[in-house]
Amino acid sequence: MSHIRLLLVAAILIMAPLVGGASDYESLLREADKIRSSDRVRFTELVDALEARRSEADDSQRQHLQYLGAYRMIVYGNAVDAGIKQAERLFHEAKDPDLKFRSGSLAANSLVISRKFTEALRYLNQTLSIRHSVKDMDVRHDGVNVAAVLYNQLGQYKLGLEYAEETLSGNPDPRARCIAGSLRVEAQYRLGLLTGDDTSATAAIGRCSSLGESIAANYTRLIRARHLAALGKRSEAIELLQAHMPEVDALHYPYLIAGFRSLLAELSLEQGDTSAAEQHAEAAVAQAAHVMSSEPLAVAYRSLYEIAERRGDIATALSRYRGYAEADKAWLTEVKARELAYQIVHQETSQKNQQIALLNKQNELLQLQQQVQKQNAQNTRLLVLLLLLLLASIGYWAYKTKRVQMSLRRMAETDALTGICNRHYFTQQSELALTQYARAGEDVALIMFDLDHFKSINDRFGHVTGDWVLRCISDACKHFCRRIDHLGRIGGEEFAILLAGCDLRQATRIAEDCRVRIASIDTQPSGYKFVVTASFGVTATSLSGYDLTKLLSHADQVLYRAKREGRNRVFAYDGDTASEFKEHAATRQEELLLAPEGQHQAELPRIA
Image (cartoon, rainbow, N blue to C red):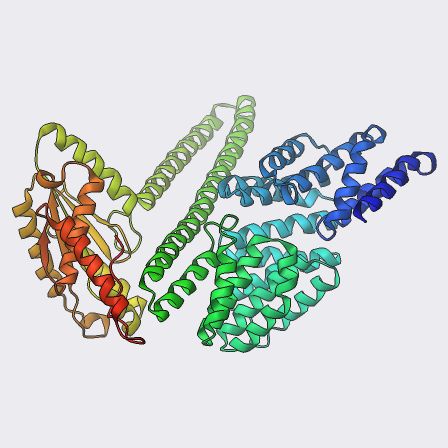
């Protein structure tokens, strides 16, 4: 049937020059533009037919067709990079402000798809700067909606809400109103502004559904379902998601499918429906190739891990937990990358504005100099004063720029919560130090420690108290570090210290001092009274060599042994720990598998 339709369209377009000419070509361009996001088949047919008749188009129409071709490559053709290049080229070549604005908006939106957030923001800033010269208000609204999409993606929901409101206040066409309404609901939900009756969400869903904008409608339904779940209305949320799951599956949009399925899995598990939860979680994980570094994937793996744990299937639980840990880490990395992209472009924009201000002052200075040349010597003093002002401004902004650069560097190297090295910087500095001391033949030791029962602290007293504990731990351990040592937070509650010029005995004594200092932390300032302890693993290059990975592995093994033998203690690596670790892990798994049904062990084996 689709072939017959395509042949019919082609026949009509072949005959069109006889009856419609250039005006017919323009009307087909506009039709393709109008349905580009709501009718994929018809849109593709029209673009193919218009390409076949390209010789009939004038320069403006050809550029319009280039825009539609770029849109098709990005949205439907799995050729995102090629589509972005075409949109970027059109942005720089187009003379029509409307087409230039649309091309820049498409490039910015598509760069987000490719996870090039910094470039996307740069294009967005260039595009938004010309929006007031755009004559077609529908084009302007679409571009402003792109800004709202991008800022929501970057977690800047206040800006996303601001741009969505800008579109809605400009009397947009139905499609732009649909998109802006959906983006406003998302921003309101993330900012905690969505009301209990969620009338704005239902209104946005209704508008998008009536236009056939299924992706926007169902994305808003997903937000509404999350809001219902947050209000404790889990049954209503499940009913809403299940009612529209077939429609979402038919869209073949991986992120939306993963979002629906992962939320259904989470809610079904909370309702006790393990079978349904597992089915939905597996369906979400099936989209992993298309939704890497996303929150739904982490949620789906977490549900599968909890299901396996409830069943007592320890091997599957371990596998699923690894998947959850990797997906959750990838999602957190993604969030940080987006935040960093925003900060970088924000700083760049500030610097550009400062440069513009400085150039304006320079232009003013040149004008004043021309006037001074026509005046007498008395005005020379005014020129000197202005020059001094200019030099002071340059010095001030140079100082500010240097401070910003230093601040960004600290952000990239420091763990924001504790103020010590983050994992990346700790690894980088440790590898450099190990290379240096390996050449000199000097000893280096590594201490790893992990807080005992930290999850219970978070569960009982809250994450604010947990964060307070982590800061106290960092402050306590700094006392034992010299300038040549490296202290880093390498996991949620896991820390490492690289000690230069220390052998295994000295490092073990330092680890014991750290353990005592941690155990003596007074927790009353946090508002609660509890005991903080940590388990330590110590190794040295004399046993593990100068490879950081092997040092971490050996220290982790003895750290695990400290956990196993009662926690709140220090164990040093002696070369035989690895075999003992493997033997214990096998025994531990067998004990868990033979445990009576319904009886769970205190904790899963540590995942190395």
